[in-house]
Each structure stands twice: as C-alpha cells, then as structure tokens.
Length: 386
Ligand code: GLT
Ligand code: MN
Ligand code: MN
Image (cartoon, rainbow, N blue to C red; front, side, top):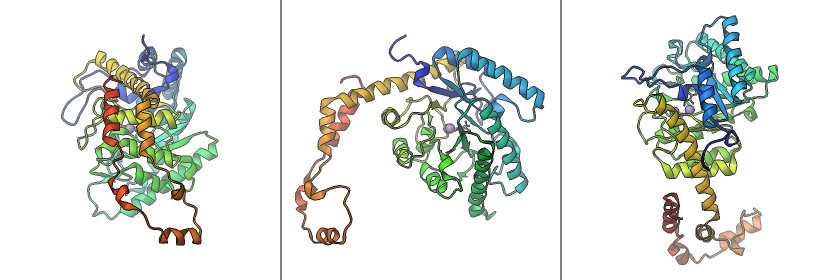
C-alpha cells in the first residue's frame, strides 16, 4: 500500500472484455482461459477498482433464453453487491456476429439495421438494470472497404436515424442515460464511418437530440489516425461532449494495440491526465488488455499498472501546477496588452480602427516564447528530477 495504490474513490473502471481478453489475434488462438464475470468483479475489487463495464454479450451470450438470462444477471448483481463494484457504462456488441459483417446501423440491408436496433434496445435495458448512466456506441463494423455500393451518404443517414430512434426509446422509457459515440479510424473495417473525434462532433450536431449524445474518445484510436489524444480530448471538452473516456496506449500507425495506459506515449498520457483531472469528473475507464504473451498474473499486473500510472501522472500534474519555475514560464508565454484586449468586441468603429492600426512587427517576429525550456522542465519533472 502506497500513495499510488488505487481505491474506489479514484473511480477506475475496466470492461469485462479488457481484463477478460483471452489473447486471441488474427494470427493466433487464445493464450489465456476465459474469466468468469463474477471472478473478474472480485479481482477488480481486490485491486481497488470502482466499477466494471460490459457489452451485452460479455455477460449474456446472444440467444440466451429469458430465464437463463435473468439467472446470469442476478448472479452478476450479487457479485457487484458483495464486492462493492458498480456498472457505470454499458454497450452493445454490434461487431462479433457475422450478421454485422457489413455494418449494423449502416448495413445496406434494412433487416440487419432493424436487428441492430433490437439488440441495442435489449442491451440498453440490461445496462439500465445494472445501473449504468452512460451507453457507448463503438461502431466496429460501421465502415467499408468498397465504395462502389454507393452508400456513403446513406450510411450516415441510417446511422443518424438509428441514434434518433434510440434516443426516443430511452426518453420514452424514462431512462437516465447519455449516449457516447466512440470514433475509430479503421479496424476491423478498412475505413470506419465517423473516424475521429472531430467527425463525431460534427455528426452529433445533426441529431434530433444532440444534448443526449456525446463522446467516448479513446487514446489508441486518435493515435492510430496520427492525431494527438490530448488535442482530441480538448475538442470534446470544449464542446461539452466528454461523456466518457477510454484510456489505453498505442504506437502510431500500428494495428489497434490497446496497450496498458502510459506504456508507450508517456508525455501524451501526462497531458491526458492533466486535462481529465481539471475538466472531467466521470469514471476513468481503461479499454486496454494485457499483452498476448501474459498469463493471468500478467493480466492483474496490467490492470494494476494502468491505475498506478494514472495516479502517478495525476501526482505529477499536481507538481507541474505547483512548480514555480514552470508556472512562471507558462505565465510569460502568454502576452496581454491593453491595446489588444481579448476577446475583441466587434463594433464597426473597432474594426475600422483595427484595420488602420500599425503594428510594430519586428519584435513580435523575434520573440522566443520559451517553449524549449518549458518542455524540458516537463520532461525533467516526469523523470523525477523536480
Ligand atoms: C472493442 C473496441 C473498443 C470499444 C469496446 C466497446 S469493444 O474492444 O476495441 O475500443 O471501446 O464496444
Ligand atoms: Mn481500441
Ligand atoms: Mn474503446
């Protein structure tokens, strides 16, 4: 037990599918045995986690008869209660069943779209029964390799129609839930629809109930697209749409690796934690899995590692904010000027005066903002020298 030992007040969560990942990949069979969901609950509680999230079929296999479903759910609820864990988020698996091989809400086959709606409503019912207030939509199969089918615009319309329908369903049922879209650029599809945080933000504005729908950005997904996760996070926060977050790590331009949080891009992980600590109060969800090389002991080392790294970086973020030299450099980076009041208030007279103003540009061109020093101090702080 030390200052970085996780506790439920840290609000760390894992998916059943994350620690339960058996190490299957496109080239090889599983390397680990599946975990019973109630065992996962006990182990996560022991490690200090706050909650566990799930897809419908992580707990109840598709096609399970109603009585058996109720037995499975009851047993899981008892485990949650006994170990003091909650289920803050739930989602639907719309990607494993071959019926979704060419999309779920964006399938060209309307029967598949109706089936996807049915499956999602049932998954939402399950999530609500377990106490979830966030429902995630990761459109794993919503995408294409072939554009000759001519559905690019239809697919976006079908996606919108489906979300509008599901918002109506949730409202009609009186569910206290918000939807969170999770963008990803590719994999398993060649090109995914709504590939980035930016595209999802634009799409949400076109929905019938935009206030109910936000984002679940994932570190690895923005990184796969060659984008910065802290920048994506800032965009989601700025739009008031950071409803949930998937933390993990990823080497840029590789397959979807879902590495342990902080395993690869420590500095981006640091600025991620800094943004979350200041602007987000939801659960810190780890959507990652242990390396395929690992046995079960490695799985729990992985889970503990995600949480400890988060806490270590949160402590570093607090040090960063308290470091006088760093704060002085940050202060000096920004220049205010009485003749450049911000935000500028538009008035015809102001615009006329601004157009006529002459700027002394040479010093503005020459000014060094001190970013090299600031970045080096950040590195030294992360390396434990400050
Ligand atoms: C899948 C995917 C994740 C999503 C999960 C939710 S499932 O593991 O790789 O990014 O968040 O559907
Ligand atoms: Mn991922
Ligand atoms: Mn994810």
